[in-house]
Image 1 (cartoon, one colour):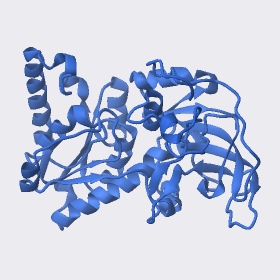
Image 2 (image 1 turned 60 degrees about the vertical axis):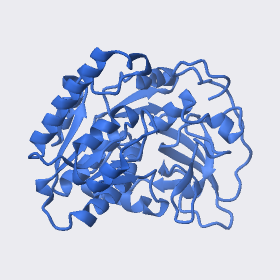
Image 3 (image 1 turned 135 degrees about the horizontal axis):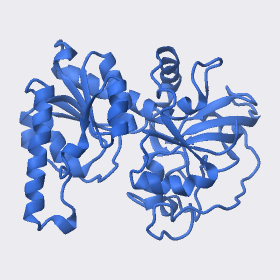
Image 4 (image 1 turned 45 degrees about the horizontal axis):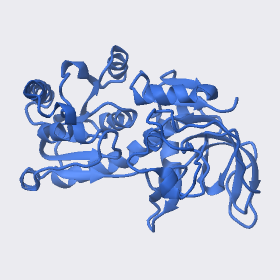
Length: 377
């Protein structure tokens, strides 16, 4: 990503050569194979919520912080490096860690000096490479979407733990977990289903409705509530628009009441943000949890603190996951098959990355797991 932004989703992308220095101690030279297109790339290209070039103090940034790479060379030096030449690995997107090993700055996003996977070659700290299990039962495209699953693992366990502090022993089968559509929400709902909850999620296309149903999640067709999002700035004076929203909201809340036996949502996975936040809170049960690990459309939120306190709502906010937890999450995926269903990914070749950026920004991708291929296997 380089140069001034022209307002188009792929407008900040520039195909060019770049150079980096020799491998320092503890670094690995890698060849990216498959990258996962994540919301953080979309945010970087839109220069919102931050301009990562300005934030990093760099004119050019190579994006792409989640994907599968092949290790070409390792300069271990005196450091304890666990990867070898030829290993296929997952990149852990940690730039700067805090004292508890959570991400403070994200690799190939807002952490200066980090080189992402949208390049034919890259070098990085070898400690960020997590080998794919030998003899894995799953394909590289299935593994390449791990970022949504690792993020979901951390967010779900924090949200579920908070819910259990107030609802200590009731059967989860009596409670509904709901999510606005997205790959992370999909992965979380599968964990909630494993824990015994009823699970439901919105979807905006026939393809996604069928996909959710095939995976044991109750699909709620988003198209039934066409005016559910907050009016735009231009629409705020339009009384008819507000009336249409009230109707959409009442219809949606009616569905939630039916699915939850009239109690509301126990845990609501809301990675959308401002346009739907008031709907999320209205749908939430007493002692309910609203949990988020992203901000697809609006970070600035507001609510009535008194109402949230009286309803004993808990708000959970997480980001990425804890680095030392990575091997355990990977091993759970391998052992339990908690991984994108085979064939559910969509892959764009490297030359089509600008098209991928545009399709993602305009919601033209049916899959929850869009990938890009950098080098052949």
